[in-house]
Length: 276
Ligand SMILES: Nc1ncnc2c1ncn2[C@@H]1O[C@H](COP(=O)(O)OP(=O)(O)OP(=O)(O)O)[C@@H](O)[C@H]1O
Image (tube, rainbow, N blue to C red):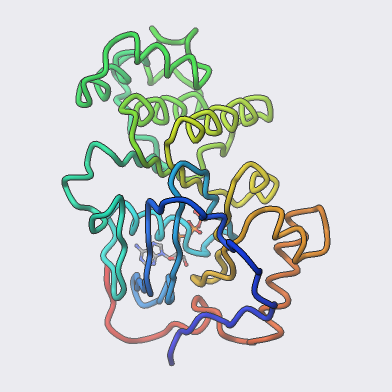
């Protein structure tokens, strides 16, 4: 069985459907990924604009992490191309320019918060002041001297975020960075992300919380390994005929399903050669 993306059942958006009017940071062309026995990304084509926040939104299992892994070059791809900052994804020359924060924080538990950030900062030539500045940015300035093993889950994951921020990457890929954080901290972090984008950083941020989509400039809406749409939050509201982004996304999904029933990559994928 083939795994084609469902044709969007909507009239095309007239201009600039992706919000990507400026230079492109990442282009994905006909990307297909198999993991285990399933096609988990099917024919994804998208452009991610430079210096903007791109949200990767979709239900659990829709392929957000797999797409991020493909962008940073740690996912074996089955077909298609991924170009990041003008080079193939994973090109070692991009190492200092691409930051990736996974859902599982990568932090040295036996080091203090500050030493963790200084350690990662040193790799990029950042100093103590830079480390302290990013700790303040993620709301951890008061915990700089605490051992990472003695932090709460949310604090621990913010150390991981600080370790990625301290290198000042041109492209920052964040897998669900606000999970488990309280609403105040979530709002603070989105403000930080906005500030970084205004200074020219390109951010790709996954979430399955649709209300966070409103913080993004452009959205990639994933469903069952397929890209349903790439559009701005305003366009999503317009398409869904509601201000509620979650409801708008649900309406898009329903419309896509009734236009092309049974095309979900997750449900259709069986057999064939597996990639890891
Ligand atoms: N190593 C693996 N082998 C086989 N299938 C996998 C593997 N890792 C993930 N998958 C499957 O690939 C699909 C996409 O997973 P992925 O983690 O990319 O989704 P996600 O949208 O990030 O989900 P979540 O929001 O729950 O993190 C899921 O059906 C998942 O079960």
